[in-house]
Image: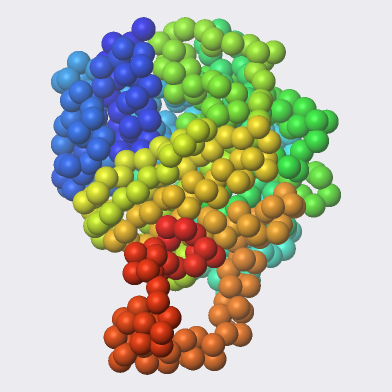
Length: 505
């Protein structure tokens, strides 16, 4: 077993890996940028080393600096988390050349499936249906136009490296192609150090279903069931659940076999995710492989009881998987809400600032993977993901009820977050019925805009009443003057109605 691991990441995922290592008796070291000096992953690691200024390109993407730290501190292995260098095959090779262990898929596998264009070529040879699109790097607009003639609009311009929605842009007409390609290249370069992009058909109304896979170096390969990831904004997931309402036992079996077929075709080892799109006719298409640990991996952990990070570490240390396919059993229902530092009322624009107050949810079957603390400064330099709130229930309704209460207890003051918006998603009729698809957030936000438009006069009247009460003094004083006595402590606890959540300000 490994004795010391360097975690080459930050935020909640660094803490997640750190905790698994601690339970396994493994010493942890981590790296950080100058702006992360007071971050929780720096405080809780056994050792921490500064590797550069805040921009990721000068710190968390500096391969040589990370490997140098690992060697200097005596680490035997490096865990990349997700994002940054997690799917960089050159980084894997550099780690191995330095005599260290990479906790993740091999460089060869990563080149086959981690690069999205290579994955499409690999999967086609395995006989799994693939979303229509290009299988090589997209060089210029002329080539893109030629491909769109076959597929038709809308299409997606995507980053070949990495994931998490970065570098993805929908294009509805030929006039938008050039701008989308430039933006996608720029985002891919800054996020993953690789400007390669490609194009594929955008399937409207599809559902996003992914299967977790695990493999060891002894030829054992298993899947741990599916996760539904159709609630997305800007092609980044916001709410996930397992199992999916869209799959019956037959389709689940068929997609699970396809996921293993994809993984086997690349000689897959360690943890990864095979992603599919399921269209309105029940036909599924291979989308991509995420050759790393996924952000939403805790959803699978909660329904299977299998610790994916520990399995990653064991496989990297040369051990066999601790279970076989027949041992995998999904029990109950799990939901995850991603809490981002974003303003849903301003098109999910990133929100920065200091967290002035923090109230975390608690209770049975509630899990919160977070790196938050009161006084923490949320900066512009990194992904706005703050935490992942997960719940488990014996069935979907119990999980849904539990998540709504957990979100109601969650309060972060000082910045805008997606806590309230997640509650709106969970009470949306289509989500409650389990009939939603990837259009759910655009539909929900469009309805909200129409609702606001239809109540402009009411809003104006409310503003006038507030102004009038302001002249009269506090609301309590105004009511008292009219002979309506109210307990001031009760009034203080009624700043907002239940529609906004019991603790939402």
